[in-house]
Each structure stands twice: as C-alpha cells, then as structure tokens.
Length: 256
Ligand code: G
Ligand code: G
Ligand code: MN
Ligand code: NA
Image (cartoon, rainbow, N blue to C red; front, side, top):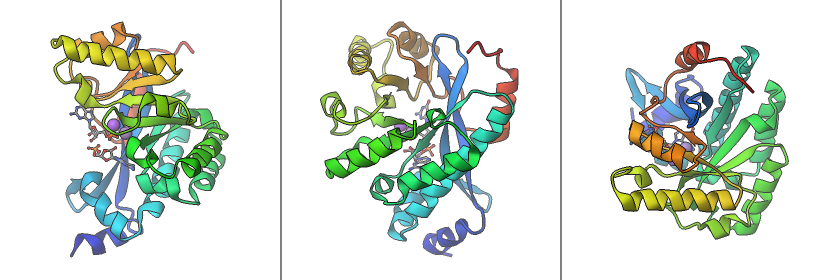
C-alpha cells in the first residue's frame, strides 16, 4: 500500500495519536504544560510527522488532520483538568492551517466542547508560516488571541522573522530552537547568544520556552538567564497520555 492510500484512511481508522512532551518550570522543576506531538501508528511502526506531512499536504488532508489534533489535545487537557491539574497545552499548527478559513472556528469549537479557558491553550507556529501574507495572518492571529489562546513562535531563530517583526504581531511567546543550545554551557559564544535572545524576547514581553534541553548544565544556564520554561530529553521525551497522568500524580503539590 502506498503511503498516500494509507494516510487517506488513517483518520477514519483512528490511527493517529498524540504524545505529549512536558514543559518544566526552570525554577521549580514542576511540569507546567505539555506540547502535543502527532504520531501515526502504522502497524507496528510509530511514524513521525516529518515522514508523512508532505504526503498529507499533497493529499489535501492537512486541514482535517490539524483540526483533529486541536480537538484531541483539548479533550485530553480537559481530562487532566477534571483530575485537578492546571496544566497548559501547546499545539503545533501546520503552516497551511494559518491560511485555513476554518481555523479560528475550529479552535473556538474545541474550547467550547471541552469548556477549557482559552488561556490554557497555546498554538505554536513556525516563522516560515508567518512570512508573506502579513495582513491576513495578523487578522487570524488577532482572532485567536481574542479567544484568550496564546501564540508562540516555534523553532525561533531558524527562520527569517526578527524580534522586531514579531512586535507587530499578537504573539505571546517564543520557543528558542534547540540548535542554539548546542555547545552550551561550555561554549561562551553559545551562552552569549542565548542570553541575548532571552533578553530581547523579555524586552518585548514575550515568554520564552527553551527546547531540546538535554543536560543539567543547559537547564542551569537557562534558569540563570531567566528563561521561564524548558522541554527536552533532560526532562523527558514525548510520551503517551497515561504516562503524563502518572507524572502529574507523582509531582509535588501545586502552589498556584
Ligand atoms: O516529535 P517529532 O520528532 O516527531 O516532531 C517532528 C516535527 O513534526 C517537529 O517539527 C514538530 O514540530 C512537528 N509536529 C509534531 N506534531 C505536530 C502536530 O501535531 N502538528 C504539526 N503541525 N506539527 C507537528
Ligand atoms: O518542531 P518542534 O519543536 O515542534 O518539534 C519538537 C521536536 O524536537 C520533536 O521532533 C521532538 O522529538 C524533538 N525533541 C524533543 N526534545 C528533544 C531534545 O532534547 N533533543 C533533541 N535533539 N530533540 C528533541
Ligand atoms: Mn513545537
Ligand atoms: Na520547535
């Protein structure tokens, strides 16, 4: 079976699933949120989106898949919330979703069905999705923000958007791309660059999440320069929802 045929039926057959990677507060170590990461369970294989997104795009399935991700992530968050958790949820948007006329309604409907406050949801968009149709993108982002939903720039620093450009968009945070952590904290240049990005982001009132944190030294450095949240293999890889539930039950009591 070709990937095209298989992926066409994957949604009907319920073969997609979301795994979740924890986002930790650098100061307290507590899990504050999770990022939903899409997987395709194809037979015994667990396929990463890198492998099937181009194909899904070609088949015109991105909109449907993207809305499935939003709905599923919100449902899972509502379950955790019903269990007393104050966890937040970050969801990746496909570049094409930003141009989709149904996006805002899909987000609004997912929130309404799960009775989640929009403030608990964050949408991650890549810099490349922002380039071009600036006015339309800004209108869409404003409508998303009007729902209380936060907007973070994913893989920040790898694309063409500058912090100066982000100033004109209703963006609430950035996720520093993992490539900036390479060599840190040993390499003084890497340390300087990360410090400069965090300082500039904060000057623009943006929250900062560091991704790809793999060592304790990197976590300590990020805490020292005032980065708020971190995710990466030092803490945990993406995992099925039941394992997040376990982690929530064993984490220290929340202090608000
Ligand atoms: O976790 P991982 O290695 O599989 O992610 C591979 C890439 O796919 C990353 O760039 C990640 O941002 C992207 N990705 C993972 N899940 C989703 C999703 O639900 N929607 C979108 N648009 N991208 C995703
Ligand atoms: O593009 P986005 O940042 O949404 O995708 C996250 C990607 O980073 C996923 O592919 C995920 O598997 C991967 N990832 C998560 N933690 C780490 C890490 O600590 N190191 C590296 N190299 N990759 C990571
Ligand atoms: Mn992401
Ligand atoms: Na990223």
